[in-house]
Length: 259
Image (spheres, rainbow, N blue to C red):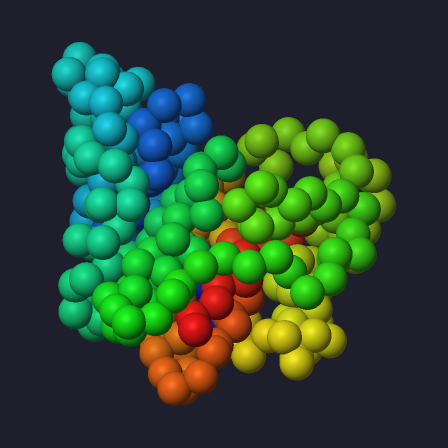
């Protein structure tokens, strides 16, 4: 599922060209979202990225980004606030023609729900209205330094047994251990899905990669591609798809069942 991101952190700054996006969707306009928006504004000012528009999604017009916009903040930066629930905005945004989303990306919040899983479940319910779409517990507890199962069946995982700074860009040298970062969540989740192939039909992994000035993003194209994977599964029998929204170090997992 992961696509090579333009300007991925594996490139050196000298090799990078300015990243180009039509739309960057920032989830939440509070503490995290306002910081991401500020960082994107700095990146634009320093020609590290060009963006057609930055859409910050928050239910409150008085969130930090909304207040900054009312005070004429972000001068010269194409920021607008979409005042609506996150899930509702995703329904509208991701319903666009696939070609129109090729240069769009989402900036998730560390504290957001598993929105990509929710969107896939809504799509599955619309596709198969007579079927039951739900989250089931994972077939086995992932063997990781930290993991927790939530009451709703979703599972949260991490390679870190310590508290990480929220703005860590997950460099090759871990700032906590001072050693090489020898782990990555996407291949771990793929291996987990393969190991439990009898209980998991497919895996959709959304890898949030750090693109510029500490801002991590998930390509809209990857989310649309995941929906195509779910749609390709047989509608005549039960389907179990492991959905993961992950960085290199942390992740949210959910086993979506369609039966």
